[in-house]
Length: 231
Image (cartoon, rainbow, N blue to C red; front, side, top):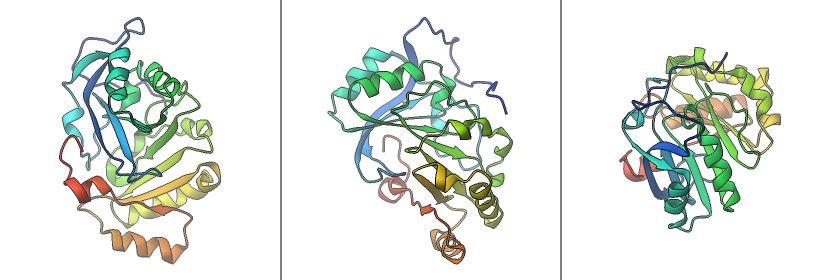
């Protein structure tokens, strides 16, 4: 798969010569997912996404937002004095200036993570960044957009996430574990039940029955704040 996808950001074109990104929100909350779940984190949510997953919970980030300079973003992040920063979306890698933003945040000494949907190339992502890549399952209706050339680019500290909607998704994800030897390649493989589509208990029982080397992930922010923006 290539990363030549339409970028629905509802803005003028981006230029590598312009030190700006379109930002939906910057906020301070508890990390709801992945290895740093529960830790206070600053989130930088970039605007725009080329995917339309059926279970998307951030549709408000598809368009709108405000153009901000990387320097201005870094100043807003620093005001929270965080240890952890997550760059998310939308799809953050849809904006080319995401890459220099990630470097700037790493240079500032934060532990930086990137939440990406798996359709855009990871080429050029700063090696200090912890990438959490969300491989799209059949029920997402965006499975064909997965760019599997990203798999060799994953590092030992990265993580791979599967949002599981049903048994077919689970069996597909289990196959991908073996096909790409994901448990040996990355720090964590995360299986998350799609909210409102699959119960956590059902997914837990499947994982136990198959003795899978994966981590069951529940979305803490949904439990605490019911998907309210800014959390």
